[in-house]
Length: 551
Image (cartoon, rainbow, N blue to C red; front, side):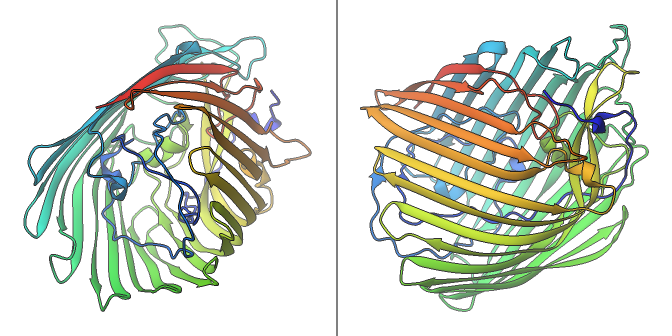
């Protein structure tokens, strides 16, 4: 594995926080529709429940849809939990229970159980528990010694809802435990040293929400509020702040329809962050008023993000929230989007960037004054979808991950730094699927980063371009094979660059009795050594096998 001189000890740069305004997921228009008939939510965060009004992108007229009924419950094993399934995907006749168990080399484990219980026609209880992780040797910064990596994440989620005649009430919460060790440095210390490299995070939260039943009142609304906690058990050197963060988190919206095609709404979110010691308590209030017009040909949204932060680099920030999509010839759609906004860099957000994160100074909110994109979507024949796009994004206080080590301590870590970044980008995507026989997808994206003088080293793990190819095919009845290849080139810094992300995965899935699935996955088949985006090396060739049951 190639390591660059930027891994030196003591790089201490302070700037300010992450926000990369993401475009919404595309709905490719004439692709195969997989009818999932299971309840398998990946809800690791109770607040990931959607309380924002539904906004549907315009779609080219579907010429024909080939429905597929195969269930593919197996999902890629990741260090960080996936986002929750949107509530709109739930089906009335889905199986209510789900159990999954997987095991592999390096003691990789992934187990999960969930159940959705309709207690009455108005009362629903959801329960989910999961654990995943690994314990085995991985390449490290020291070429003479492997790193015995240990990482386990456990989550429990509980949510209850009751539907009244015109409003619904929901209450829930979650508890998470993340136990892991940092990568060793070039020197070791006594096992009794409190800075021995182990760490334990505890994540807790609870919420209460009230929402209107759709079309039951003149206006639709939802409001949700609750408490979030994040605790780090062991002291982290160079980390200039507290080990505990408390947040009072509130979000919601109010919307009303002028008629069938026009709507006005305002979304809002407020986070009150509290600390014990060196970090500054602060509050971020985010407002998103907007107007939408949607018919068979045109989708137009005119809005703005108006954000106000108190303390920790306080002030007002304004960004556009404007979208225009136009469908023509029933097979093509052009769009122009001008987006932006702020994103809070709380401990949970930093942990999603890298569980090994260290931030010497308090993270500040990231601000995107503009993320403009223009593109074309097309579906010339049934099952085929294409997209071309290009854009330009400006982010103040973008977040960067740099791998670091310090020989005076017993571990390496991922340093989080912030700076202003501009990115021009362009990409294309094409996918095709036919019934349940096969589907294939090819995506590519290129980035041209611009940094202030002397800050190019921050781009070490940012992508220069990305190519992603996925394919799935049915071999015989109930047996399918799928493969994914992802190549992510890194930026050249002082005539050097970090090794590219280069991963080939393969998996087999066999369905038994319409409810039991057995599967096996092979990951990093090329057995490449490289740094992941979280700043740490990845496993070599590894595999997992397991089964899942829906009931």
